[in-house]
Amino acid sequence: MPDIRASAEVVALIGIESLRELEKDAFRSYECSECGSPGLTTDPASVVVHRYRGIAMVRLAHARCTHSKIVEFDADAPPMIGPEGDGADMRAMTLVLSYREEPRVRPLLLLEHRVETARLTSGGERIRVTMAAVLSHGLALMSAGGEMPDLAEGWQLLRPDQASALLLVPDGGVAYRGGCDQPDEWTRLVDAVGACIVLVGTIGLYAIPDEELTASRVDQMLAEAAQGGSLAGGLVACPHGEPSGPGPVLSPGELAGEIRRLWR
Image (cartoon, rainbow, N blue to C red; front, side, top):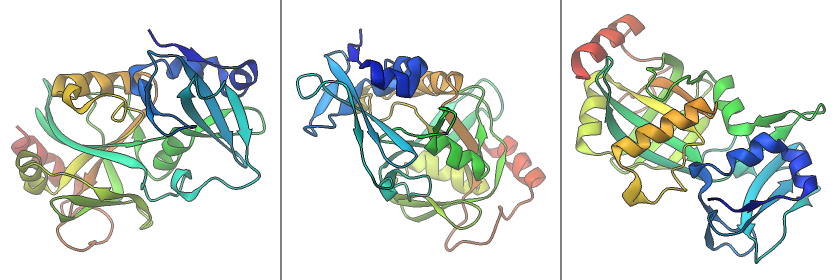
């Protein structure tokens, strides 16, 4: 069972719902905000909030390193955790999952920020920065892990090589830039129709050891993230070479037809 400790002032700031969220598997493993070494929430852990101007960054720390607290910074949030960051502190994972519904086989790109951040409104509402940013650019909130998302107009996933990727939002901004392993089966399915499914949210990619990230476990993690309102997604165009302007080469109808025919 998780042993997560939060002071009264921390609970008042982040809310009971956020505290319960930290007890989920998605946060089981963490990097201590104090000493920087790894930790598990099955051991005593303290909730530490770094509060910048309008941004609250919720962190975990070994209970032996510090008590639960709020640390105030009279500064803007660091760029890499802001809503317009370039995804430098995100993990990317590619995989192919099978489903009972059409399309039966789907190439996925999963993205998750290492640290959850929130913007606090004047009324005390807590808004997830990552989720708000991707939704504002056209991704949609997923109601189920196996839901087939609609086309995300204007989004593009560029692949300079087989080990990296660049994910662009409609205005040309960067949602992710970094490493991206591209297995042969995933690449074949993406190239067949010129698109893949991008899912962004609090999934648990950092918390779960790589050897436990089986297809069935990831499917379960995506379902839990969607159920908790922590997963957004979209079908994203994957053109070859340089950006080709907004949208895929195929029309949405043609793209849907190719997906039904080739993602089997």
